[in-house]
Length: 457
Image (tube, rainbow, N blue to C red; front, side):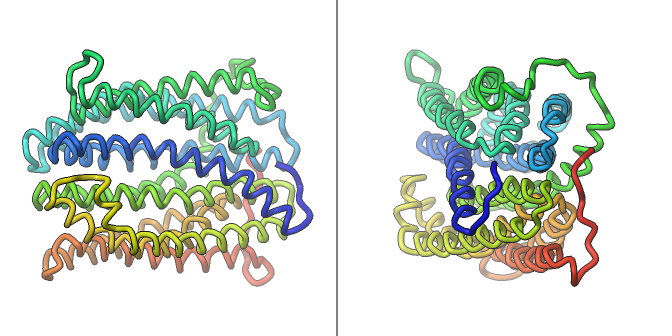
């Protein structure tokens, strides 16, 4: 990151940060995308089993990784304030925290996974696939969380190209392992959907090893001496990171868990409905990578400018990012409208699942506009370290408004399963409006009394 002096320079720097983040997000999401698509070509049960397993794992993973994401604004503000000597300590403490979180999840999952799946009332074979998919995935949780901490460090320096390269290397590894393990190639048994979990766990170990090598040996990361000193564990620093990270994590958890909850509620419908819903959500989530990537880029850029106390520059970055995200969401919505039949065909050849998926994708169009506004605003707010607003927004818009509306429409109207999607759309729209107002208040301190949070000491 470097100081910019014009809108043209800011656009250039923001896109320099953004493009690698987008490639990284799409690559990481591509693992889930190919898990779903390739499992769906084994059977509808394999697709449904992976869908349910992913619906349980995704909100847990993204929510807890959101806690680790506190490192990004912390480090970006430290670099902006020219306090680079404090970066290594924050990264090591973030790794310690990541390991503690990962181990806790494994222990809790070992106790609760079977009762959760048992209480869902799904087809026994679907339950078996979901259970063993998650059990296999658990072997990769610790390396995945450590990698997330290292990725936050690399991204916070504006070196998003490095994480892009790592992600690009990981995707073909995962796809190749999926092919071998899902379909039983090269002498391996045919694991079906369970093979996707095994492949993901192995891939997580691979990307961690690559990331450690990059941070240890490559510029500019090695100048921060991240692994040169074994700092003692500091609960005080954990607390500082958790104060920022927990609201980020919970806001992400509330957002992703609502989709998981809807998928689990869908288990009351046919296996074909579950499969179609998951296919449509999977593609909508893929499209979401663009506004999400802009959000992450804005956290870095805005955090850097706030750390240097250049608040006008932070506002300008916010306007650029939000405008571009909104424009891209319009193009995405048009693309879904025109090509929804072809998109549905990527996931399944089953005529019933295909027809249902096409219908669900039409509702996904309305996700794009709200996401295009809300996501980059969340990123800008995190750059200011204003994380509690997004936490409150996520809870109200999804769980107080979205889910009850969806439940009512699904249970008491003829639109049935599609009612859940209308509820989700309603929650997203409210969140976009709420966050827009919040960012305006923060960026106009002369009109509002807002205590800007400064750098973590």
